Image 1 (cartoon, rainbow, N blue to C red):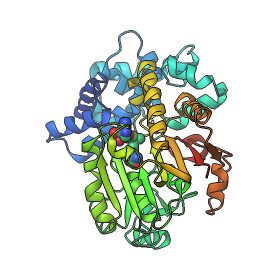
Image 2 (cartoon, rainbow, N blue to C red):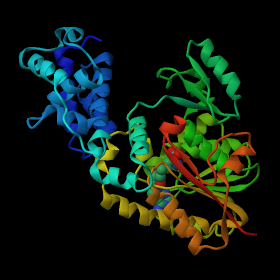
Image 3 (tube, protein in one colour):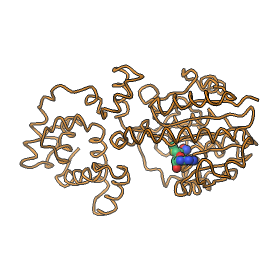
Image 4 (cartoon, rainbow, N blue to C red):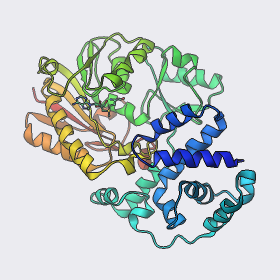
Length: 419
Ligand SMILES: C[S@@+](CC[C@H](N)C(=O)[O-])C[C@H]1O[C@@H](n2cnc3c(N)ncnc32)[C@H](O)[C@@H]1O
């Protein structure tokens, strides 16, 4: 890696905006790159890698920088201590004071770290995780969340099967392999740009984490059924559900965000699915939701959550979330689950899922729901998946983590309304 002084300067500038935490890191970076068109592809790649790298290890790097911390020092400390570069490898990238700091930080003793510092987590989050896991488990989880995520695709089974997709990609020189759990998953070895790939444009695949795909198999919608994806967003899971239904029946995609839902439309067009009906709702109590009460075979609640299971992709979330925001989210999650449950017909299935790793957003929401709704019973996620040939030793509820499954962190519970 050769790094220029200008690249370090740009990374330090971009990091300054990101660390204000006013907006998500990915949108701050996109804006930074939009405003600085003169940056080449390599410069952008370096800036993004440096910003995400520092966000992942912020507490450790702050400790290494000492009192007089700056974004420039954080980038240099990341290069020296996380990337393990030497002064010689940096070539012309450093001058004067930077060289002195780089040399010092390379050899600096970090001293004693608190548990949260050593896990690069905020104190409150380390505490919450330790309530249900040992220190060794939390550390392994935090470290796995600090590694960049691989790129997974989902074959659109309406267009071609997974093995055919693997073959086509390999023929194009894209190294990939079938996923470990989802029958539709393909894991890529690198991170090629795929937006213009013919198989992307003709809807043969979508980018979707393998863990996220498993949630569709937990809902297991069938041909001709009435299905609701209650928090559809841009439709990552909706598209999978539509394909599992073989483009038949009726699949409502609800969301309160018109902006997110509008991103589903071009994806629907590519996918060849015509059974999806996107509906913007005002809230979980919208009259359009109430009209479907008791009529739906399967309902997926992919609830708004802290997103802490996706730290591999969004490392800023651990610094942007707070106990206060979390408390508000859990109230919302319980309200959405209660409303969505009213749609389910007797004998129908309800899946509650999040991309969070915190029990208060997961197990606690489901336990309170079951207590208040004795007409629902829990099914075993392991059995539901096992019957579809997906072997995963998860027991009753699905808990995926990058440490254990090399997927994003997900939670899901499968519930059934008694007939
Ligand atoms: C985890 S995201 C969904 C991601 C999406 N299912 C996917 O696979 O791409 C949660 C979604 O819930 C939506 N949401 C928030 N409050 C809601 C509510 N009261 N009713 C329905 N959807 C809501 C958010 O706009 C957001 O798009």
